[in-house]
Length: 612
Image (cartoon, rainbow, N blue to C red; front, side, top):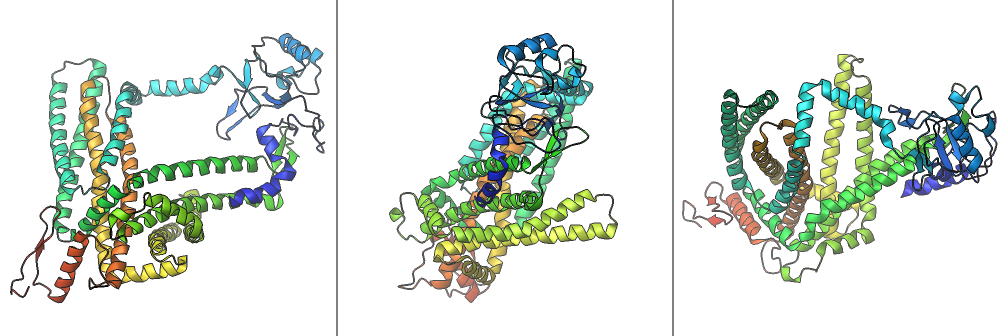
C-alpha cells in the first residue's frame, strides 16, 4: 500500500512503532527503551529498559468524548497481580520487585507519607491488572470498575418505560432474531439469479392479507382483558405496530400494481437478460461468493488503515502541556498533512477493491458470453478473470477508482461544511450547498456506471481504460433507449427482489413472535432483522445487477458487429436472439408484429397483413 511505504520513511526517525506497541508514559518516555531527554520535561530521558509495561494511576477514569484514559501513565516493570489496599502495600510491591507505581520523583519509602500521593500515586485500592498481549498496557482484570457507565445506561433504560419494554423484547427474542438473520441469508442465496416477479407478487399479496388478519386477531385478544398489566402494554404496542405494518403493506401493494401495469410492455428485454443471468450463475457458481470476498478484503484493509492511523496519532514532536504537565505529541511540517493523505488513501483503495470485484465479474461473464460451446468454459472462469485482472488491468482499476475519488472528496467536504453550518447559513447559501452536493452525487453515480461499463469493455477488448471508457460510452449512447428501459425496469425488479427477501423475513418474524405475545414488543426485533435482510439482499443482488449490466454490454457489442449471417453468427443466448429478432422486425415493419411471453418462452405471431 502506497500510504504505508511513504509513511515508513517518516516513522523510522520518530519511533512511532515503539510508542504504539511498547507504549509510553506521560513524560515522553517509551517503555522498554533508553530514552533521550526532552527539553523542559524533568522526568523525561529515563532508562526504561527494564520497565516494559504502561501502568495507569486511575485506569477507570475514561474520557469517552476524546476516547482516552484521563490518567497519568508510568512505565513499570510488572503489573500488580493482586489488589493493593493501602499505600504500604504499594510500597512493599515496589520494594519487592522494583515496580514503582508512583511518580518517578517519589521514592518508594515515601509512598505512605508523601503530601502529593493523592495525585502522583495510584488511586486506592489498586485493582489487579494484567498486561494486554502485544500492547504492554496494564489493564484491570476485573472490568467491574467500568460499572458506573453500565449502571448509568441501565438506569436510563429503567426510567424509560417504552425503552425498557423494547429492550426486554429484544432480549426475550434474541434466538428468533438470530434465526431470522440466517433465514434472510438463505433466502437471498436461494433466489439469486432467478426472476421473481410472480413469486414476489403472490408473497406480497399474501403477506398483506396475513398482516390484516393478525391485526384483527391481536386487537380482539387485547379487548378480552386476559393478559397482565405488563402484557397489556406489550399487546397494545404490538397492535399499533401491526396496524402500521398492514397499512404500509397495503399502500405498497397498490403502488406495485400500478407500476407493473404501466411497465408491462417494457419488461421483455430485461426479463431476457435476467433469464440469461440465471444461467450465468449456474455456470459460474463462485459469483455467489463475491460479496464475501469483497467484504473480507474491505475489512482487512480498514483494519490496516486504522492501525496506520494509530501510528500517525502518536507521531510528531514531544511537547509539554503546561496546563497538565504531561507530554503530548504534535505533528508539525509536512507530517501534519499525512492524515489527509491517509484519508484520501481510504477512499481510493476502497473504491479500488470494489472496482476489482466489478472487473472480476466482468471478465467471468464476458468469458461465458463469448464462448459458443458452454461445455468448453474454463474450470474456474472467475479465478482466470482474477488472474488476468492482476496481471494486466490493475492500472485501469487504479485510474477508474481515482476518478471516483476525485469526485467523491469535494462532495464529502461540502457535506461536512453543510453539517457544520447547519442553522447558521442563510437560505441562499444552504440552497447552493445542497445543489452542489446533489450535482456532485449525480456526477459520481454517472461516472461509476461508466466505469463499470469501461471495465466490461476492457474485459472484452483488452484495451486501456480511456479507450474502453470511450467505446463503452459510444455503445451506451447508441442503445440509449435500451439502457433507459433496463435501468428503470431492471432496477425496479431488483428492488422487488430485495422487498421479497425483507417481506419473507418479516413475515416469518411475525409468525415466530406471535407465540410470545405477552413478553415481546415486536418493533425493534423486526426492525433489526429487516435491516439485516435488506443489507444482505442488497450486497448479493448488486452482484446480480452487475452481471445483467455486463450481459447487456456484451449483447450490444454482439449485435453491433454480428448480424447472424455465416461467419458473423451471434454469440448471444437463444432467448436474447429471439428478442433481438423481434425488435429488428418491429423496426422494419412497425406496428405489424406482435409477440407474447408464455412463461419464459417467446412466441412470434404472424403479422396482420400475412407478410411474415
